[in-house]
Amino acid sequence: MQRSILILGGTAEARALAGKLAGDPRFTVELSLAGRTRAPAEQPVPVRVGGFGGAEGLAAYLRQKGVSILIDATHPYAARISRNAAEAAEISGIPLVALRRPAWLWQPGDRWIEVDSVADAVNALGEVPRKVFLTLGRQELLPFEAAPRHHYLVRSVDPVDPPLSVPNAAYLTARGPFGQADEARILQDHGIEAIVAKNSGGAASYGKIAAARDLGIEVILIRRPDLPSVPSVETVEEMLAWLDHAPAPLK
Image (cartoon, rainbow, N blue to C red; front, side, top):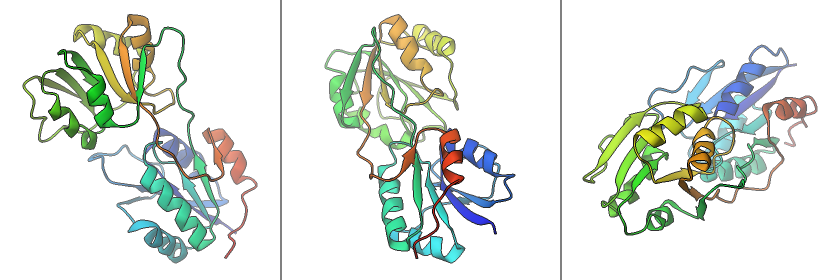
């Protein structure tokens, strides 16, 4: 008998996991995306786009669809979705496992300033005008309008529309992965003096961190939020092994 899996996705790991499971006769798989990216990458399994209406809505969806395993493979900073997933699993009695890539660790030569929020990152840039590389989501850029003295280079998957209300900003639209050599070229070509980023973990966006280390550029790194304590693994391979022995629903 096939078991139904719902993957809460939006990450490279979610897509890779869906690809591994797409041809597995033991499972039927659906991938859920929040819908924040205008043109998401093509996915190897059926996709649902949009929210569920909180934890209760997600629990109802799990029951309605007969889902037997819920996988939280969302971004490490998608704390609200992860909390809703944990609560929905508790309500529905459906097993939940999280796929959480480990955070980057400080290495000798890194010039990190770790902060708790985007607002703290704005403050950490200081009063002296600087050339800053922003590698955050479109929804998180608005606080930088409070520091119009800086020159910003903004990279995002989708165009920033409307653009920031600051005198000096340039925009790059690109989807990772980003290699170290290419990142170093961007940093040097634009004379970047500071990077603002999240500690996303994984290899796809680590190139800028490694390049900044080699070039002696400061990185203002936003710490990860607290996430629910649920069963979790760090890699797609570990998730596949977990699924080999996945528990049955409790209700």
